Each structure stands twice: as structure tokens, then as C-alpha cells.
Image 1 (spheres, rainbow, N blue to C red):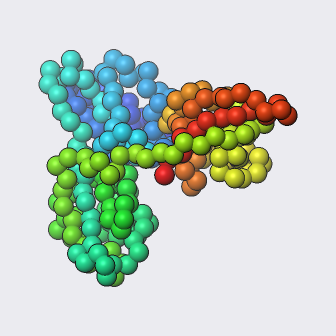
Image 2: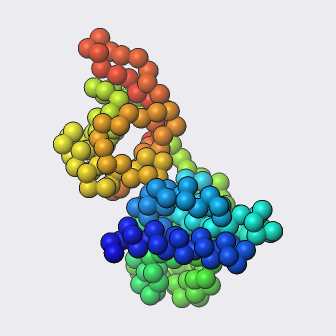
Image 3: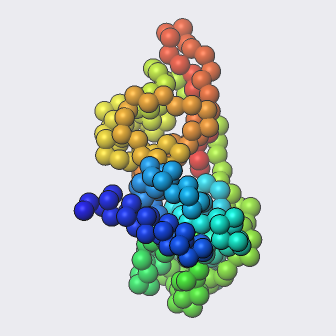
Length: 251
């Protein structure tokens, strides 16, 4: 049984448990590949109902909830908490990156599947985690690199971690996935095709395997290792019949 079959079997087990026991059942955090596998079979679980969330809008790592308020007779939120990690003395802190925060958390002995998105703002991190490990992180995490930190639970989603985008207009030869990716990320067309063939490109959470797909307004394109953008619209052609395209790049 390959990895795709294994994860689909796990989805089936969770869905059946939710259905037979009339209660909500949750996955751990899934990466983009895991979510793509779920979206491929999502319709198979319409009988039980499913919802996807990573804690807030725009998260790349998300949990899947099997069950619905109608079938279960009650409502239950996702078992996700948001932690705020910040230096005790900011002016003396190291330069801290996403990798530094993630590495420290994993170094506590936790599985990556218990950790959702990490948003770094001005040397501080906001981390979505499974509620089963949040208290342990708060108690155990005292230092990132050489910087002493404190960890607190957030009761609300701070405005500063809301997704931020910048609008751009680019010129491409055509509205093909490989052409757009190559232009947005300043890579060769061959490199863009390779990214797609290697399973590193996702549109609206679904892994793409064909490079000739045309994008439509509102499509969210993620390229693992490069970034994410929202496809806006086509905006006419140049004198050389190239195409103007509007996008919103996540920053």
C-alpha cells in the first residue's frame, strides 16, 4: 500500500468513526500534499460532512473535521490553539526566522503534524498548534537559538497575522500554469515545468500535474519553496500579442 492509499484509508476510518459514533473526528495538521489527497476524495464523505481549517483564513497546513452539526446534534470547534512566541528582550534578540521557531518546537520532541502554520512578524512568531501540545510548548519552550522567549496563548486572532498581499501586473506569453509560474517567480519555463512534475505546485489546495492548465480569477497558486499568489484577471494584450495578467502576491 503506497502513501496515497494509506492516507485515503485513514480518511475513510475517521469518516466512518464520525458517522457511526455521531461525533466529530479530526485529523492532525495535513501539509499541502495531504490536503490535496483529501480534496481528491472529498465527495466520498458527503454522507458525514467535512470541514477544513488551519485556524484562520489562508493557512496552508490544515486539519480536516469529519462530522456536521446536523448529524452530530451539536457544534464543536477545531482543536487548534494559537501561540505567541516573543523575545523577553527584543533589542538583544537574535534574528529569528520561521526555520528557527519550527526547529525549536520540533526539538521539544513534537511531531510536525501537531504544528500548523507559523507566521513570523518582527522577530516574533504566531504558531497554530494542536491543543493537545499547547501547554507543553508553553511550559518547555524558553529559548530560540540564543534568545530567551516567552510563550502565551492568544484568545483572538491578531490583525497582524492576517494574510498580506501586494498587487502586481506581469506580462506572459500565455495564460498557462507553467508560463505564469515562471514569470511570477523569475524562473525558466523548464524549471516551472519541473516544479509541476515534482508535485510542488498546488491550485486551491489541489496538486497540479499538468503544466498547460489555464488559471481563472480567484485561483490561489502555491509553489512549495517559492511562495503563493492569487490569480486576478487577464488585462489585455501587448503589441506583440503577449498577455497582461494581474496577481496578488502573498508577502
